[in-house]
Image 1 (tube, rainbow, N blue to C red):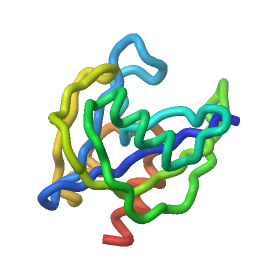
Image 2 (image 1 turned 135 degrees about the horizontal axis):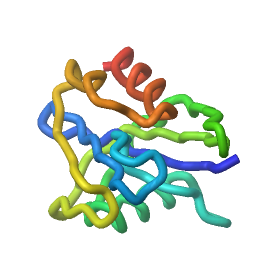
Image 3 (image 1 turned 90 degrees about the vertical axis):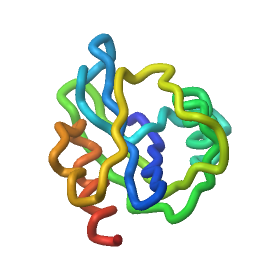
Length: 127
C-alpha cells in the first residue's frame, strides 16, 4: 500500500487544487498536492518536502484529517491529508499541468482523483 500525504492549502478563503498532467497516472484528474512518504520520513516532513518540490512553496501545516484508504484497480493508497497555509514562496508547478484556487462550494465541481473525493467531503464538513 502506498502512503501518500496531501495538503489542503487554504489562502484568503480559497482552496488550491492541482491537475495531473497527461503523462501521469490518472491523467487530467484533480487532486490536492502532495506525494509519497519516503523511508524514515514523518508525514509532516514528507508533505513539506513534496510541496516545496512540486509547487515551490513553504507551507505551515495545521489540522490532520482522517486518512483515506482507497483501492484503485492496480494499487492501493493510504492518503494522509493535512490542512495547510502558505508561509512563503511563489506558486510554480513542477509536475502538474494546471492549478485553481476555488471557493469551498466549487470544490466538488472538479473531476477529482477518486482517493481525494472523501478528503474533499471531510474538509467541507469541517469548514
